[in-house]
Image 1 (cartoon, rainbow, N blue to C red):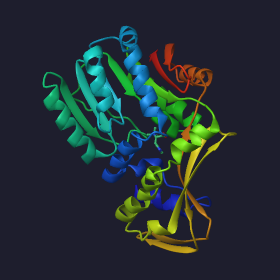
Image 2: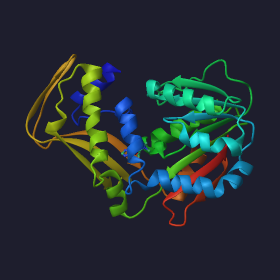
Image 3: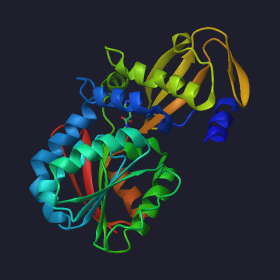
Length: 301
Ligand code: AVJ
């Protein structure tokens, strides 16, 4: 992890993986972002789920093991319980301390469902705990987190999920769609500056992980839609010339130089269906909102 981070900071175009946005404070800032008027994905996805849950539940096999990828506060999965009746709930998240709190709280609300919390970075490899049951597996990947991968990485990632389904499982996934650039830009550069704080907090996290001496006050949040690549990009831009040191290295950043911290790819309904097919999924069913801003898909392994 330290080597991966250090190499990113020293690269010709410096970058840090977006997974490092989620320390405890970062996870809380992201929760707050989801409440922002500009940040439509969470709200739009929730509206699709609440409107179509009975139909979605008919498409999904009830009594499956619900495996929540990037569970965070577990709120999305909790809302599915009464419709999907999972036999078991497995919550996976990179932010292990934050997850532990969430699962403990949820377990007391649903004592009859067996729950397992797993602190894991599932972006490179997915290893499920040995003690989970043998029921059908339903992978739940809401919120358009899939957008953090390039389409090529996303295909590989989803193909791995499909394998973990062992032929009879499925995937329930939320995907953000291409839309007016102003709407996209505002969602990632909000008036209150919460997304800026979320992005800058990555530097605080790096200070803790690497023993670095980033001063967030010397950096500026940048976020914009890159139309050619169909993705939102987030960067941290040096406000002046800055020397940064950390345990394994050091670097001079020129004024205006950027650290690339996140991509959030936006799909069309067709381009994402094609991606699912390339990953080996079949029978994709999709649900969307009236404006066509967000899509929920269920597909079989
Ligand atoms: C959690 C990856 C879905 O890309 O919209 C929110 C993260 N970044 N605001 C997204 C995020 C800036 C979010 N995902």
